[in-house]
Length: 408
Ligand SMILES: Cc1ncc(COP(=O)(O)O)c(C=O)c1O
Ligand SMILES: [Zn+2]
Image (cartoon, rainbow, N blue to C red):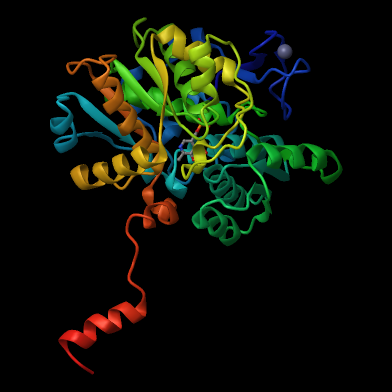
């Protein structure tokens, strides 16, 4: 099954043992899973992939789980790559696709990362996990932990979307709502994890969520018949999906499955929380903590991504850029996407559509380029945000209407 060999520190490159649960390297660097890609090249053919499961686990040789019985799957991955018609036409883009991650279990792409991370917890005998989350990762962690029979301790901001709170409670997690942001949640987990015996599955503080998310890159190449688009739009919070896809492209090139051409990676953020955009514009290698982060796109409310240097490196090497949009533009674009394509996207997906429009207007992108937008979640998880645009009349209003037409 897997060809996992070891973990490598992304900062100091020291090797670490993958047969025990691991968090960060001693130097503070996130650990990345490494595989025997020569063996993969000799023993696996990309033409065989469709014979595998209809989930991200079809890429098992480049995923870390050793024992197939440890895989905790709810059917994550193999999401549709939808060719746009009406939106593409409106924007003058004949080659515009949307990778719809909203149809994943738990309604977001976080399912991929947590399926992989929780499977590794199951394989390595972890009994209790803790996770600080902006919202959707919590829902996914709770669901996969439930399926694995692992105790989940969730810490998220008090004002997360209701869907995230309810899904965690419904799947039996221990939920703490924190007055603060994901960074405050992370601090609490860090302080308590040793005394509580929790294994921490924070973004990039364990090595396998990124492995699940990298399957977005494998899948895209498979769906595009082993080519890649010219441009990828990605809504960037912690940036793990972007880093993961970048890693997948590198692995696939080593396997001889794709060439050296890379898409321009566009990291999309929001005005109220844009640490990556600021760092990109300043030519900095790392971001600075973004004070008073605020946005209804809860997944993008990450004031200081741990893997900022990896995101910035990928964006720069790809010839891409980082761009911020306002909450208003994001919701407008989310509704436009729903109206034109029938896809009710998370605000994070809407942010990418808004960013696309800006980069066409300023000439950064050309209309003949092939473009893929990642819609990372379902709009159904963000009813509070969208309900500001579609307020319902309350009962007394309905009564009044009824009274006019058919008096009771
Ligand atoms: C819907 C959605 N989109 C995007 C993100 C950002 O993900 P990443 O950490 O990969 O940047 C999140 C994170 O919570 C999310 O929930
Ligand atoms: Zn290190």
